[in-house]
Length: 107
Image (spheres, rainbow, N blue to C red):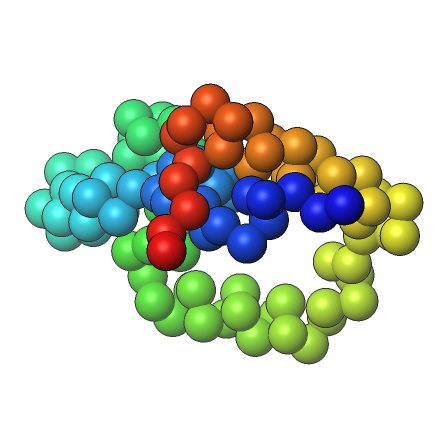
């Protein structure tokens, strides 16, 4: 029987794949534009990698990375066992959010 929470979308940082909020992303762009911050310092300040900051502040790098993933997508595919494990963990996480009242179904 599927979880009730499966059809509910996660918001903001409830989605554990997201490392930064939209406000933090904008703040990083603004800070980098001043020229007083390096990629490494911004990454350390926000708890993300230098590469993550680079992809935010440089659209050309982000586009190159997207093209690379598109061309080499097979390298990034998990095994069936890994995918199954990840899916189960994600469903349990969403269900725990739902049961604790942090995830609400929109009707």
